[in-house]
Image 1 (cartoon, rainbow, N blue to C red):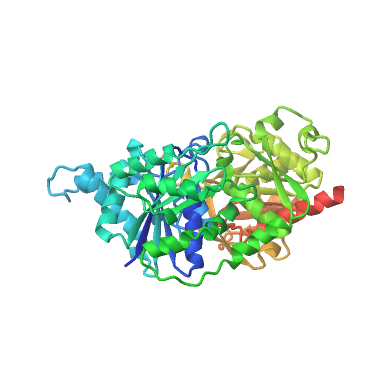
Image 2: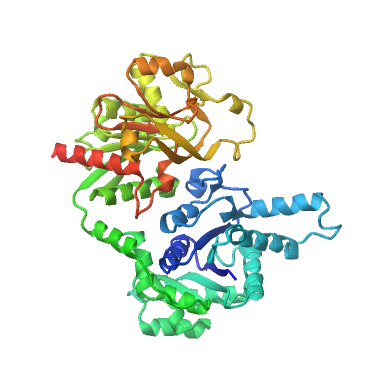
Length: 544
């Protein structure tokens, strides 16, 4: 029988529940188990696809085109199990499915209720990943929100039922809570006691506690927590603040024997562990030399999570190149307001000059002209530039305006009346009104051209990456762009769509229509992020 671990959170949000769940998954994989991760999100949206980045951070896209919560990005970076539509469950999906069944008469005229109909649908979806993959050993289910939230109650009830139905050796509860520090440095356990009490009121007795605290809890504090929460003393763990990187968390948990306790409670025999990749990663982190400053020019700079995977992929690239990466957040609207980009990007800018510029994905017109200015500055000053999705389209707009002289070159997303729509909608997208899940989404192949930067990065002709966009490079202008010197470095397999453009006679200027950040890992950086950071490192060293 498959084993299930339900990870919940208490006291407050943003304690790192996703990182804790992912780290536990990494440890169990290190023990040779096949782990599958599932996220239950209590929001009523069908998925994260139509949410503003300011509301919920980035949208993480899976191979099968699901637009999911950013926690699935954590799962992908820490673990190796497949992720797809079945790994993301929302209240919207659950209620939509139940209402459809009711309309079809599948409940035989019964009164449809939260229990059993909603909870049965949740349980069925939780069990689906293991049913679809016979190799699954353990399923880790993270329940979003905080215990006590009204939205989370049906998911907690479904978890309670499954723990009861599967038995305590096949399903356990791991609860993440907060140990705050008050004046004088005293750690207070009362919030954790109340959080566990709230779980018990839902009918769930936590088997394992992970306490988020400023420092490692001492033995007496752990025993006090265990006494008041009915949890075994050896099942109380600390997730303390780290000054290095979140990717150290699996090793922190390993040193506390979290995986051993979990395996014991699940009735799984102890087995050899292999965390070589994680130890190697922390060793590379410790020996980095030098710092490269990467300007991220975007429109959602106030919220770090809006570009979560991009920041993580930059960090991975730095690990691969042996340097520290300092992300410099630059709101593109600032560049729109000035004609002197040097004051923001050049050597005289606060903090020093930028060694590389990255323009990530995004939607809407705000700040676009600032991004075009950033691209033009990087092109003319021979500063490494990396454009992702919108960032590639910005390269094309800059080339049209500033090289070909088409002053109104633009995307029809921003200007429907432009005479030079170098970026435009595909025909099948023109009449789309329902924006949820209707873009070019998920994994698809890209064929690279020999002798290009993208071909050198991947070291192969065909690569597979994930897309999330609606607008494309306009084939109407492909010939003129090529004749003027812009390199078309990659296409779709049938040659119908442009997937990558590169600047000629430039140290490293590249834009891709896909999102390579989604597949980058701390133990294996994205090839494009690795080469981009390497080019920025060379730029930094040349300036010394």
